[in-house]
Every structure is written in structure tokens, then in C-alpha cells.
Image (tube, rainbow, N blue to C red):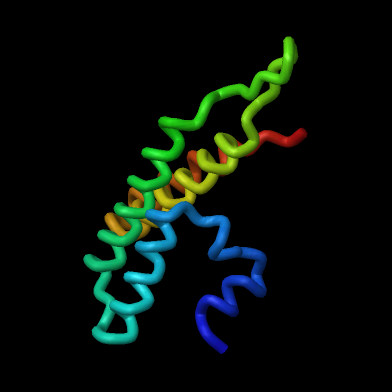
Length: 113
């Protein structure tokens, strides 16, 4: 079973990634197949994926308007969550202390509804 199939079984659809994320994902797969993936290369891939999400988040409006009604943009909320995940992965690669601080900050920000 391929990595892509395993990801899709867990609910992560490759089609939902942005074009930059998809390109980076397939580039990373090719790199893994051809050479050994080092922590530095993994960090570079995560940085490029994070940058792609940041660019998309900047262009996404905060609210969606329908006639006179204003609704939160669900896509922006999902992009923020994805960006937070990439930042957490990056902190794991940079230093264990930063990773611990990031986990604590994430737990402190969890709000129960």
C-alpha cells in the first residue's frame, strides 16, 4: 500500500491540498524514493508547505457576505489550523524545547464549545 493510499484512508485527501502543497508533497515523495530524507530536507519541505498556506491565507477573506448577512469563512479557519500544524512540526524539527512550548501553547488555546 502506498503512502498516498494510507493518507487517504486516514481522511487526508490529496485533492484538498493547495497546488503548492501538492507539488511539495509529490516532490517529497520523489525525494524519499530516490535518496535518504534528512531532517534538514524535511524541515525545508515543511517550510515550503507552510509558506504556501500563508500565501493562501493572506488572499482568503475573513468573512463571506450573502446579501446583507455576514458569515465566517470556513476555509480561512481550516487554513489557520493547517498553518498551526505546520508551525508545530517545524518547532519539533528546530528544537525539543520549542516543541514543548508550542504544545503547551496549543493546549492552552483549545476552547471547549
